Image (cartoon, rainbow, N blue to C red; front, side, top):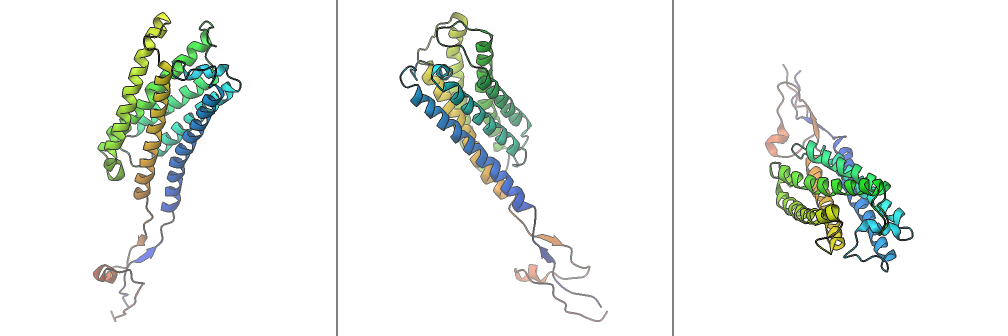
Length: 264
């Protein structure tokens, strides 16, 4: 007796779980960035009197009561967002994610160092701790925008949602890079001669931070959509017996196992 029938569909068990994990990583990026934004907003409210947001860098909020804790919270939150994005890239279908993910990790470590080691108080001489803080801040401002730009370059060679959103990622990464370069160039006279060439370094730094957060959120949003399509649960099929006919493929519908029996 030979059995004629269709292939039997077995519901997939891994796709939904994996997709949920990827979605959680993207959501974590957005949540951590939101936490950093709230902490930054609280800093500006607390320091609205003694700190000029246009002329004073964000690190100077350390002199505000509770400023060190809020600065540390913002740094830790952005570091966590960077690490979550780096982890998600490896499972997102982005081509060659290694280098941008590594830069995100570098940026996260630099943020943690900058948050743990405060700068000197305004008017005080620059000590070793302040130098470490500045170097860590510079590493953050270089690595994170560069990671965004590399992600955009790789997205253009990818497929699906990555390729469709490559232009958006490229524009956000380019804008963040231009703003960051301008800010770092403005820092050179301060490092060399302790005198700013551009008086509004505080406003420029805040713009850089805002663009970096924009890049993190934009990339996380694209990653969420891209991985949702990449791991959409599909029905896994078991092979049909040899000599069987897939009637479902002929009529375009899913049919249960059918035995039409004929004598061998």
